[in-house]
Length: 227
Image (cartoon, rainbow, N blue to C red; front, side, top):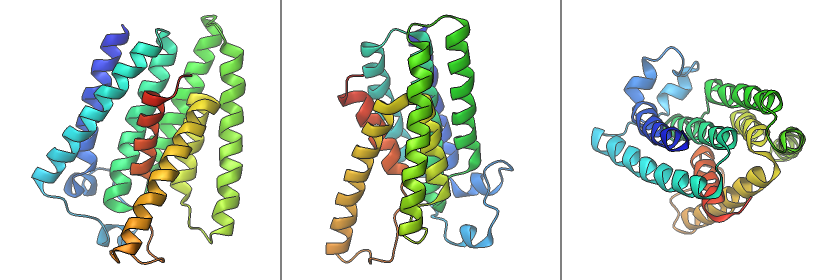
C-alpha cells in the first residue's frame, strides 16, 4: 500500500506542477485563479518547455523524497501524512513561483487532511497517536506565532499564504518536520537572495516567492533528517 501511495504522490506532483506552472491554466481555474488584477499582471508566463522541465524536476525530487520516506517509515498513516504534505507544498510552491501567492486551497487541504489523519490515528490506535497530536498542535501554534511576529516586524514582508501553509505543515508533520523545513528553506532563501543582490539582479526591496524554498526545504528534511 505504501508503494502505491508513493506512485500516486509522484504522479500527483507532476500533474499538479504541470497545471499550476502554466499561467493560462491558472487563469481559467475557478479554484486557483487570482482574485486581484495586479496578481494577473505580475504573473510569470512560462513556455511549455519550461513548464515541462520544471514539472519533471519536481517529479524527480518527489521520487527521491518518497523513496527516502519509505525507507524510514512503514507506518501507513505517517506515509500518507507526509505524502499529502508533499503534494500540497508542490501546488503552493508552483503558484507562488508564477504569481507570488499561495492559494488557500492548498493550505486548507493540508490542514484539513492533518486533522482527519490525526483523528484516524486515535481511532485506529496508531502507536504514538497522542504524541503526534501534541507535536502537531505545538508546531502549528509556535510557527504561526513566530511568523506573525516576523510579519509585523518586517512590515508584512512575510505573506499570509506562507504563514497558513506553514501552519498546516506543522500540524501535519510535527516539530521535527517544521523545524527542518524552515531551517533548510530559510538558509537556501538567504543564500539565493545574497547571490541575487550581489549580482544586482534583485534589489533589497524586491521579494522572492518563499513557496519554492519551502518545497525544497521539505524535501531536504525528509531526505536528510531522521525522525
